[in-house]
Length: 183
Image (tube, rainbow, N blue to C red):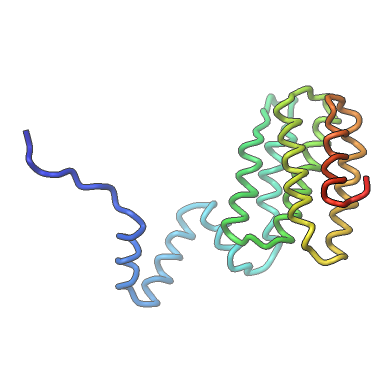
């Protein structure tokens, strides 16, 4: 038997200590290498530093893909992957207006897909209602103009939700009432 202790995996503390030793040029070179290493890293950096363009575009594309798949090509849905796009944006930027846009877009795409194909999936319905609630919580502190625009879009989701059955429309009405938004 070996009396050597196993070395634990490196931690953020180890990485941080090494980074503290580097100069500015080395850190910029490191970030450049991370930028080149993966699409996710590029998306994160574009979102964080907003060098131009629509930083929400790639997040919306992910949400759209996983909430409104091409059923003719046997694509599946994934609420988790769609929600991960919002979580990724939150980590990269966390701007309330961007979060609200992604959450409302999520609700629009989920409701549109349900309505379009007649989906009968309780977990999918529940995910829509939970995201609707998160969207309402997020938009409450926005300035009047953007808040009212988001409420208008959420009202359309509410209207469509009555086509689903399963009490989805009623649950959304309760959420609107709880958040002081007339439904």
